[in-house]
Amino acid sequence: MLYQRYLRQYAEVFRRTDRNMWNYEDGCVLIGLEAMYGATGDEFYYETLKQFIDRYIEPDGTIRKYDINEFNLDYIPAGRVLFRIFSRTGQQRYRVPIETLENQLRSQPRTKSGSFWHKGIYPNQVWLDGLYMGLPYYTAYEVMFGDGSRYEDVVRQFSNARRYLFDSETGLYFHAWDESRSIFWADPETGLSENIWLRALGWYLMALADVYELFPENRREEREKLAELWKEAIGGILRWQDEDSGLFYQLPALPELTGNYLETSGSLMVAYSLLKGARLGVLPGEYYSRKGEEILAGIELRQFTIHRGQVSLGGICKGAGLGPAGNLRRNGTAEYYLSEDVVFDEQKGAGVCMMAYAEYLLAQQAGTLSAEFPRVEIFTKEYDPILPDDPKFMEFQARKQGESSYERRRDSQV
Image (cartoon, rainbow, N blue to C red):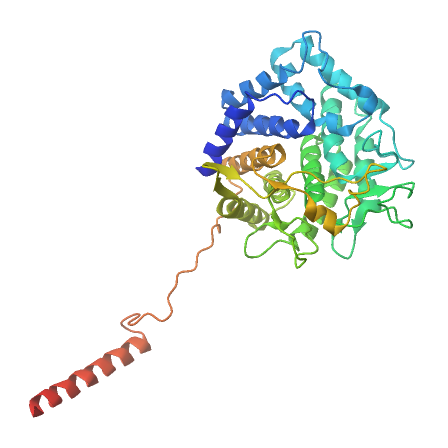
């Protein structure tokens, strides 16, 4: 009940909001609205996302507040909802911006290994965030308008992430990698950033989930490779799930670090990936769907709160990045990740909450939720009496009868 009412109210406020910039944070909410529409069929969610998009897409298809020359992968994900709008309307107004964003990806600078740079201002850098920002859109375009020639490229970029960012000791991925090993935050030998950040892992897990779902079934070999990476990454993150809350820490591999905290957006991203993986059969059995439900329950019990007189979703890291050159504060240390603001109702948290809850609804419809959730233990210890044929009960009865006999004898002597 809380999820449904909160997310609908959030959408009501979002449709009246204009930050006057084309950005991925609002893109998270747009993707979340589309997910809710897909799960519920409620036209309210579609109309809300279209109303928001129409503020930014001019009648001639120009994207307001967008600059292709920045080569910024963060500009791509908000455009994912354009595929649905174009399919429904057939209007060139929405076809033109689809091509605009695809043109950016066609000319996006790449590392020597073939992966997209995260941004023009981040040369030679691959961030886990960027896999989500770019590859689901890149794949959706190929499915709708392409000739199938780019599927191999998509898988290669995921494989590069596994090759260069994976940490076998923890089973997790580092936030970013600089192929040139020249940026101040990178290890001079490996090119890796110093720490493992939860939301970066979440972006990666959601990217795998969304791309796998989009890949045609006749691309069997590539789908199997994506599934292999997905299952390995899920196995890695579940090693670090907090047992008492079901959630994950901002720095998941450092749970005992002073100041570390259970973070909402990244935890919801893991839930989304788990529930989608179970629904699609990549993560078989009830174990994974139950783990996803544990996260949603933990969020509802711990991260929703009354804040300034209204129901709010808290525990959301406002933002964390690396560099660029000259911004030495964003250096990738543990202290840096724990110094960023923790906020309420921010788009990355609420948008992903929509996505995760939509996956819960789809799993419910598909019958892939765990029959074992929630698990309940009934308290039966230390009650007196317990059951009539229980030895403790018979001992209790004998003791009571003995006490009654003693009392009768004592009364008769008075």
